[in-house]
Length: 141
Length: 138
Image (cartoon, rainbow over all chains, first blue to last red; front, side):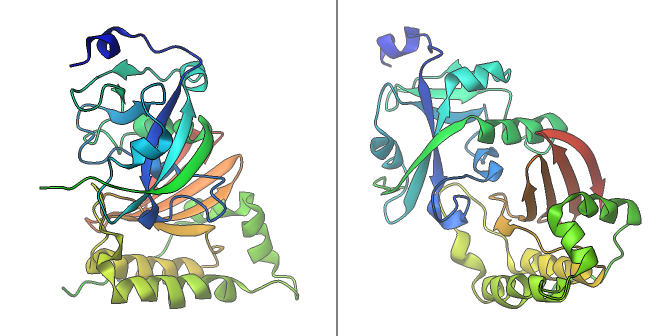
């Protein structure tokens, strides 16, 4: 694990990335707005909604974590806006992904609760830009 | 797999939420130069959902569960029920990512979502300024 990343607090002026599969039509054709469903936790978000710190990678690099042959938009979220809305962000650096963070309150298991539904709406309002689409490069088992 | 949700009646209380939307008001008045409710729904029912029925696997992607044929059939039946009861056509219809299909009415500050879940449940969710103000199973 990257110790620097693990110990690095998340500043208010940072930005976070959420990878959004282009195939779902959650991003409008003009790439100006993203659907709240982009922030509904998926099966891999078992301990919290996964996001990536822009401090550690570019939007295009973040998209490459997606599968090869697929395309992904990157929704850019403002930490300041998230915190102002009461969303807590927890650093969860991984060996292969030092900038990994989670919204621990939002998990795949609780995705249909009232609170989760509101959080998902709230996260859409924290988006300040949408970048891409970019090609995924990851190979899956 | 063959599965279709029979036509169902949407409670008056739930239909009333659509009247707060500009689209809802339009559908109620149906001015001569505006598309009728049936015309507004046609691209969703006859084109979008029909195309999904022919290729239900098109939404398979990283970590998302695409809607299956049964869920798409259920969404088509829901669309027909909404149309026939005068509900306005949605802003968009999208997969939910966890096997369902959402009919969304996006008219800031209101955001209405009718979600057809893979289990066959149909739910109405009404948000105002991001707050969930009403939730009901249809």
